[in-house]
Length: 284
Image (cartoon, rainbow, N blue to C red; front, side, top):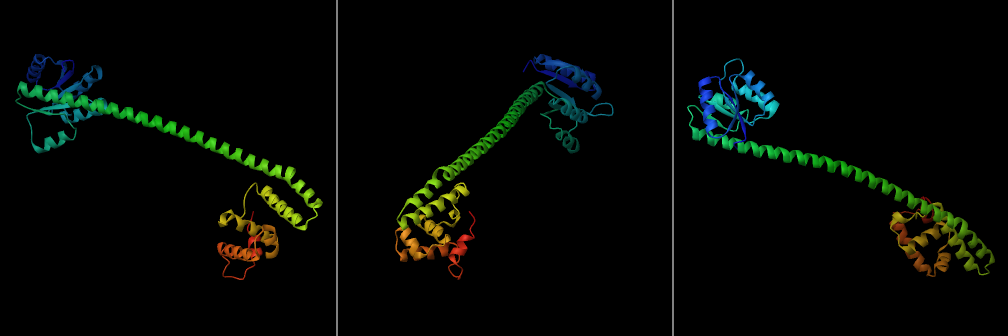
């Protein structure tokens, strides 16, 4: 700690010089001696100081406690008080400035050395902690900026993929309209079997629904099974249970079972509402 610079603030010159000699014998560097608040502040403004030994009672309008407050506020310099006064009121005011130690007059050299060593160690530790805190604060700010930039990039990427997905869906819908549906009309016109023609018309209707809604299934939110979805679509087209059974290759009783299940899922199983009307009100 011999390289640390110490300022003595003491208004009694003989005591100040005596304290200086003690510090020099201990191999400390004495930055200077100030006899009042103004001299102390002026000295610190011009010279580097690591620790101030401050007499609480100073001549003039500003005492040692007020001077210490100014030094800590402006320069963050640690303070050790030197005082012959140790009553509770003075100690309470002194503690408010958070000094790193007290030296009570009359003092001994060993007491001074121990107090200074502890004070300088505490000051060094606090300085390291402040440096670590500042470094962490800078890192947090950097990470915050990086996260914001990453979030912005991810948002842009998601928007791009969403647009790309919609473009693909729209392209598929357009392909259905131009490349698939026209050929279904041709198959229907050339087919002699009524069942095949009916089935082609159902397929065509479903493909047109898909192309209009860009792949959206109007019944998807109803939690219908695959077969119920097919039955629901045919009911909405106005098909009878017998026609539905023939087109889907199931029995009329099976169609009835699916009708009842669909009515329960759309919440009309206890009413006389037409299932076809209810399904028609569901928007694609």
